[in-house]
Length: 379
View 1: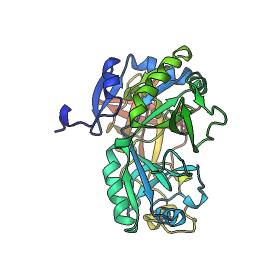
View 2 (view 1 turned 180 degrees about the vertical axis):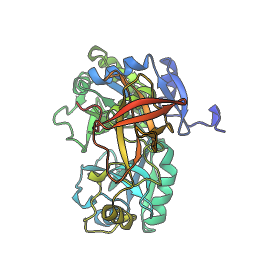
View 3 (view 1 turned 90 degrees about the horizontal axis):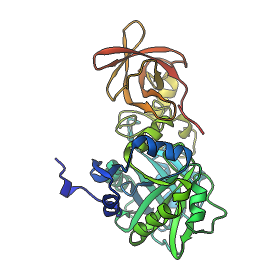
View 4 (view 1 turned 30 degrees about the vertical axis):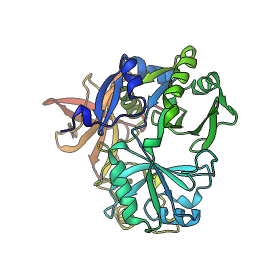
């Protein structure tokens, strides 16, 4: 078992303790579950802004000395088309195994030349904390031997600023230059006072915002600066509990729940991120082609409860005649919608249309639910 002493700690660990955060084990890291009331943290992100410690996420640098060679090699490992990238552009995709299953879902950045960040000279990958070492091992096993794959977490912290007032917070904190900020799924170099940082216009909440890569020696100071200067905009620190309800409302999948090495991106409803016709072949392509040809046997599905009972991971799904048809992967009360919601996989030849009635077995009792469109929430 993982002990408290063996858990990895982010650069903000002591800061979280000083702010009274409740800490829990998450993917081998000691992370803040909440700083106050979870509902208040959730609403702060939806209505003002929230600050997240995401330094547990894997930050990887991949380079070969030849940008084109690196892009072409990485393109054989993912279903997205990396040839459309250019310096400063990022894309969401997945690393697939030979069976088309998702080893991890990742963001791939083609990096410009940043004077203060020479380690990110070609490509950067952000991956999930629990999958960092498997992702590194997979990359090293499938990239040419002259490639360098570096895990840079010990040298950098990563925080996320999310919510409709995030730009006001950056302005109050003295970000330079304030204009222009990166476009969606782009990255650029900025400064807080004399501290260089990388800002990417990405997030995991369903709100606009940025994720900020910071040299480890300055993470604590910038975290405090943002919270101090953003207080008038309602900014507050946010823990994992609210992060999960936020991502669930946006119907963003979580690896280990909605995504796994036995689930393909097509089954997960991520077909928009699969470019079957791209120039390069990629691992898992033949399986995805077969799924496109013969059809899927299961589909990612969003549903809302018609009774006030919360669906949980592994709860079984049934049709209205009592036949088992699937399983819940995530569920919660939606703070924004004020009702229980859930996602899971339904075994069927085609996706169920919104309005289709279901039954969810919750603690041995059948509860009514209905299929709804994805996502539950969109600003």
